[in-house]
Amino acid sequence: MVKLWIFTPYSVEDLNNHPRRFYGEVQPKIDHSVGKENEPSGGGEYHKSTMKGLRAAINRHLSDIGRNIDIVRDREFKQANAALDGKLKQNMKMGLSKPTQHKPVITPNDLSNISTYLMSDLNPVILRYRVWYDLSIHFVSRGLEFHQQLNINSFLFLSDDKGCEYVALSHETKQKNWQGGLESKEAPQDKRMYATGEFCPVASLKTFLNHTDTEATSLFNHINKDAIKSPESTDIWYTTKPVKQYQFSRFMADISRNAKCLINYTAHCLRSTAIQALNDEGFEQRHIMYMSGHRNEASVRSYNRDCSTDQKQNLSLALAKVARPSIPSATVSRPTDDNTTAAVTAPAPTPLGFPAMGPPAMSVNNNTHNNLSHRMSSSFITNSAFNNCTFNFATNPFTSD
Image (tube, rainbow, N blue to C red; front, side, top):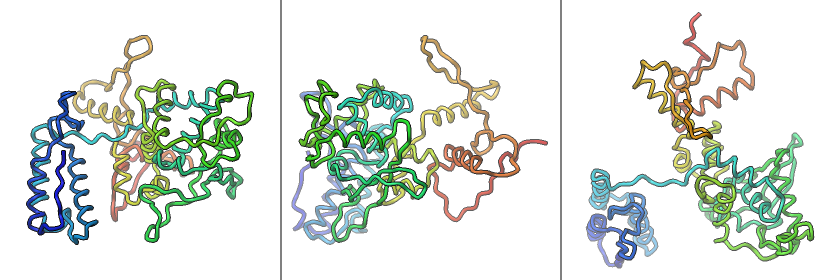
């Protein structure tokens, strides 16, 4: 247990010494009833992010009580921060430091299973899940706080200058980085969810609203019991009783289970998946930030620092070619439906990690540009930052005459 002390009477020197000792001694409380630490990091040590969070919490408390000091950045607290730094390095040296567990990105196979399940039938349960899922993906939301703020009048059904139909929000929503108030900047507006024709998210939303009681004050409400028994017997599938915030946390678990996914995903996994997908498609960081609501690029990179399963496999196979150059082609075993294994061949290695792009083209059209952008997005440019650099690319400069 973290023992708190009164900060007001302490001098700056005391506030340097006390946290220094605190950082070195604090440990998770052991729960003897289950025989393990409450913290998942194990080994009797807090995770690095937990320790940094504790320091940030102390710093916020000092600010709240009027102490004009910063224990994170001020030079007077250099010794305390050095003690924390040394503690974390020692934990890593002793094998007690665990990697940060980010919310997993949903695998392509599970995404396909989820899509199949959500489009399998039109009934009150699946339709509510489908609309919640589509809004989570298209508006890159954090899930719990976003959906509770929506009501049946939260959407504008519009068309752009090309005549394409889309849905936009009619009001601002409070988010982690956009709290409102006098000093708050406006959150990105005019995010759009476009109609797609087949399995259209806009059409699903219209159907959902048509089956919702017109007196409802929230978008997601409890399901009418009569509609569960016989959807055809009534037009009102959803009542005026709102779904509580904690109930949204169960939606993705239910979807994962019903779709027979490998694991039970959370609502935040949808956000991670959406951001990773935008990154893999080659969108610029500023465009991803527009959709996700992040205020700096470092926060976005914490989501898309990882590689997809195919990218990880290709990286390993490329290194296998280095380790075993005498083998004509590096392969990896992949299980098949009949419990046997099939060999998957690695892509041919090319300079700078680019896939083979064929002979030079005489002209560059939109398709060529899009293909090049897609290939670049899965190579060394992804998750990289460049300043004041100029790059010149040839389509295949290493092809001999």
